[in-house]
Length: 356
Ligand code: PA5
Image 1 (cartoon, rainbow, N blue to C red):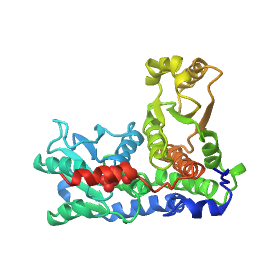
Image 2: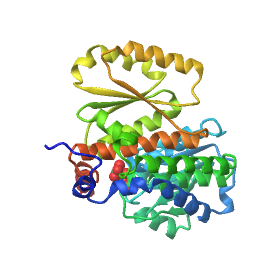
Image 3: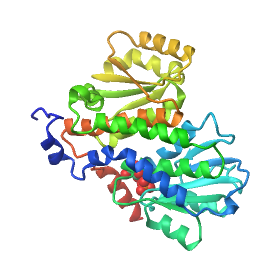
């Protein structure tokens, strides 16, 4: 295949059939709109109770918002927040649990089954969707639902889905006022959008550079702290779905207790690979020291690059780290000569399951 130039606009026109790059370029505005939609959603007084936990139900591109919410507010929430990617709910979910059912299509069977179970248990449920069964059930039963614009792949709708969760937990008083964090995050994302967009040349565009570093290699994404663990996982899934490659992800300090040993033989089995370490400006000195030692133990033959999250608030740091990976995965799709939109195995699986 002829070498692809990421600075040549015809590259995008030929491969990116639904302009997913354009959707990524509009990510900051999508976040603004997600916040607005959720700020305006009807949520009754019966939702102003003392909660025992927050659960995000969802699969794939609709589930990641729950992980990111839990990570962003891990230092602030006084109740646990978790994501359920399954038909079944944990036994502790009950009347005092806030349950977000997140399905972009509104038709994902695992999410609908868990949503049904949450309603049976009397949990306070809120739908987040562009339509489908989920919107219908919420509408017919007078349940709150944040309805986001449709017509995109779920993974290109994270601004709508995540920011809906952020705005609702803020409205319900589960976290403090987010005005400053929202402002800072959007400023950081605006600056990144200008840098990562298609018209920003590769020599000034880190997203294009990262795609170039990872081309024809196995991406290994490590989070330097657990708060970035969900972001590392997001990078991996974006490389899977957009660029159609396998990828690995893990987080420190846990990877020091298992995966680091796998490099002993794995370095020969994996083929060419490239490690991206996502670093957090809020890392403790201990975490920095740990990262130095870990990198040293990986050995000099392993290609490692560090990518720093931007901003002060956890909202800005986590979204900025995610945004770089989202854009890099789209550029990697173009370098790989594939349409980032296509997810044939997922569609085929859903079709066959729907047939019984
Ligand atoms: O990226 C995708 O399309 C998938 O990961 C979907 O998000 C997943 O299959 C769940 O579908 P939905 O987001 O419509 O609930």
